[in-house]
Length: 199
Image 1 (spheres, helix red, strand yellow):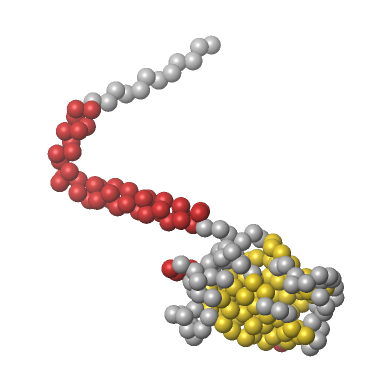
Image 2 (cartoon, rainbow, N blue to C red):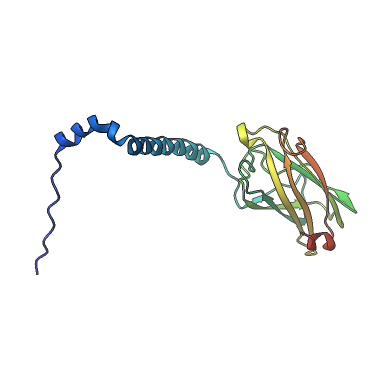
């Protein structure tokens, strides 16, 4: 059989443009359309800025200072989900254990973004075991632009790949010059099982 396509309605452009003279009768509708257009432009600019920003991948390698580095730790870093929680400041840390301390390690030396609400994993080879992990010192250099200078750090989970031991560092704090305690660094003790059950 044959298929009949509907004929589109013709548009009278003269009448359409003449109706612009009656905008005062439709001020509410016109203001809503203008507001939505301005909001659209604003979001396009904002999203373009976010798109151009470098983000850290879900899994990154923290290079060892010296080789060989046969002992491996896996770090899982979780950023808060509230507005402004992510950062493009350079983040550094040191882990302390019963047998030693790591050198200073940088998570994002190229100022890649730790995006709000993200959970990122890092592989960190070291020369030897730190023993039982006791504390974490973590900070940033406040070099991020605008609202990305601050950082809300939720948790850092460290897994000793060789022994499968897990260490939890519960932070739930702003590292910021203007928010929370107005500090860009913090020291956190490893949480005990009793403390973990209380969260």
